[in-house]
Image (spheres, rainbow, N blue to C red):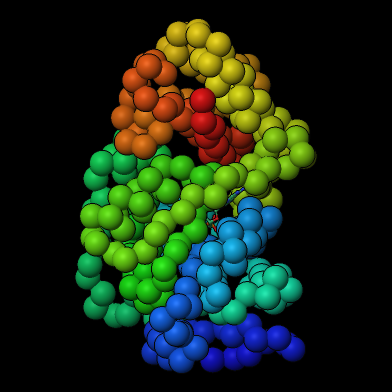
Amino acid sequence: MATIGANRLKVIRTVSSLRRALELPRRPTERVALVPTMGALHRGHMALVQEAQRRAKRVVVSIFVNPTQFAPNEDFASYPRDFSTDLKVLRDAKVDFVWAPSVDVMYPEGFATRLAPEGAAKAGLEDQFRPHFFGGVATVVAKLFTQVSPDFALFGQKDYQQLRVVTQMAKDLDLPVKVIGVPTVREPDGLALSSRNVYLSATERAVAPMIHRVLKSCAARIKSGEKVDRVLNVGRIEFDLAGFALDYLEARHAVTLAPISSPMDGPIRLLAAARLGKTRLIDNIAV
Ligand code: AMP
């Protein structure tokens, strides 16, 4: 375990030192909050950290690029990594612990278990395009929850289906952690912050905020009484005209993610995934 700089940030690399570090300072009244990340931290991640610090005395930020949620054709090897800048940002934010296991620590030789989430994980959204994804996410998040034993775990609404899957997984497995969703942090032009935004060319970056603009106008039109199906059809054309290759634009029940065709049937969340060149962007909005 290494202490970085003048303040108390500790970088922890093994499960046994993590347990020791968290047990020693822990009193019954002291809450622990976990912020799971894959690093390359930006203001979106830091909004999760701030919410964690509001809720708990001890904050653990995990940094782990999880290989089991990437398909072989995806960007695991090239995923942005900048550990030393991440540590500086977390030290400045007065975070207590960084949990940074290696792949071998997280998945030792012989590791043979994988969760298979259903329900929200099979909503026909991300799962349709990344069928391996939620199994990998649920497995690593369940491990993070049992490793850290947090009272709270903070997840971004930016990855809305993931937030629903993790919430359901914690409930189904009786894991004693409260999963909290934090609103999406955006650039001034509306683009949701994402570690993958660095992949965008200047031209793609100029088009990218359209994803939020289209979602916002769809939400406004549904609110004003237009039929959901019609609004989505127009939205799909708008994505097309802007130059996106659209994977999906859907209206779903905000909690179950079941298809929904009217605001009378429950709270609606609009969710979209679209590709600009080689970069895949996701976003969502409440109606
Ligand atoms: P990642 O490092 O991309 O796995 O993200 C780690 C956590 O940060 C996840 O819970 C994300 O939903 C959350 N997150 C990522 N981008 C944003 C954002 N722009 N606003 C809020 N939370 C975010």
